[in-house]
Length: 312
Image 1 (cartoon, one colour):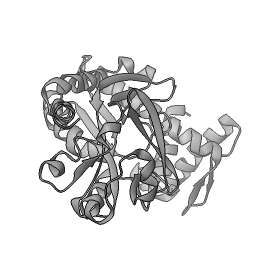
Image 2: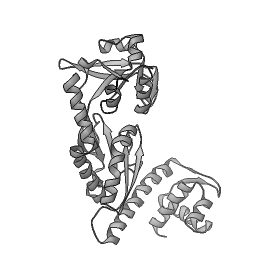
Image 3: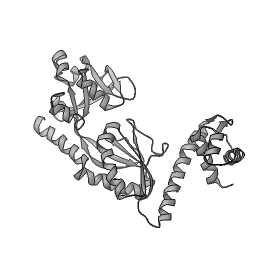
């Protein structure tokens, strides 16, 4: 039995949620589906699925195999598209993960032009405000803001953004504005985080780095939610300069703690070393770099610099 056929059946079963649903979708007899799964488990000497004809559940080993199998099959599809076209041009599926607001306002507007340039490419854009695992989640490229931990991933810098602290005039009139990061503990802070709990906001003054422990009154894993709450007077938010540019310009938000603003945060594109030779990944990276000079990313950087020049 062909192991790639068996791998494809396994992935289809997990995605469909049952053996019978996968059999109808492939299409293939239920007996053949079961035979492919049994062959895989025999080959690896372990159970991958706990299953009936109606329900399935992945074992721990099955979950690992499922993620890798999806990645392998996606790579095979991409190679097949390239070979069938008889060229080394970008083709196939390209999965991109980016923070929600950055993806919506900066990355998404770039995609129509890229797709027009490369008609054989299809893009899956994931708006996710957390650090993704490129290997386990079968993501080709991720955009991240901030300093990166050590890893085996390849990083390509796209630019920088400035993180600023701001609040609505109504909040400042009601509670006053903090004069130093230490005073934030007495204020209502709106915290970007995957889960409630203390976080550190980093600042810089006279060349010295310092941190403030923030407990917060509202936590969210989406920056646009926090910015909207800040505009409504709920508290103090720390956000990228380009995100709140229009609100500051029109007086809905005011900058505070300007003397303590940290250095710009880098924006990087991350990808696996093995993806370096992928025509689609290379083409999209080159397109992003081009856009940092002429497109929305360039506008974002120029705004951050303008804030520093006029208000810093």
